[in-house]
Image (tube, rainbow over all chains, first blue to last red; front, side, top):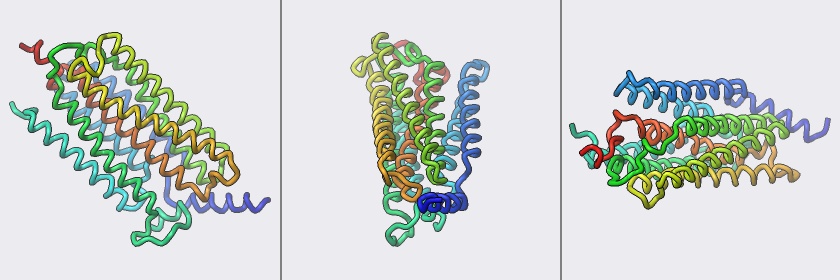
Length: 109
Length: 214
């Protein structure tokens, strides 16, 4: 066994103990994301839901967003400082969206 | 905090104990959220205010966009698998999954080019109406991000063939590219729902055009 192989194996053992998910978990998350997307598109064609479709699609979209951020971007396992940096920007963005919508009369009955 | 640093091995001492480059990448992604937030807000506030067609309901093809969305979601999976195999020391699997990610990213871009061309055939360009201007600006900037991501991934792939170019110990470059790639994926998750699905749902405000409503 070469020195390079030994180093690689040692690192592999280390990486396995960092708390990051295994490839099998990533695959499961991908399957859930696919199912959620299929549900989104399926629900879209159910005309009986009327306005009920809006919160359902919003929740499904938020679910997909959260899965990617937590598992694929590793925020669930990484430092909370990274989470803070990202969510600060996201909260400002969300605030801007709703503020502009309010200014343009979206929420007027 | 020790977890975050363990994955990337040694780095210079920092006050937070975190790698500065990774912290900078998260700060950039946070700011990019604001960038896309303004574009999405602009699209929404001008929704339904176009004086002439075509309107979203005339041009959107949900089944086609659903397929391209699926492709981008799967590219996120292949990207995270590439990174996982790299940290486990399997360079061959890393290269295969990284190449798969770049191919899926290119496929998504091909879908977007097809869609833009189809819209142009229907008479929708960025100059046609407010819908065209805001839609092409939003999705065009997202497409530009994906294009940059594909170039980044391919450069890492080619670099990995150089001796010592990409190693399990030096995986931060791949981790940063992966974060960027997942980010373009989550932005598309929002665009797909807000722009496409809400865009053609008749109960959503602004779907019935202003002039048609009167």
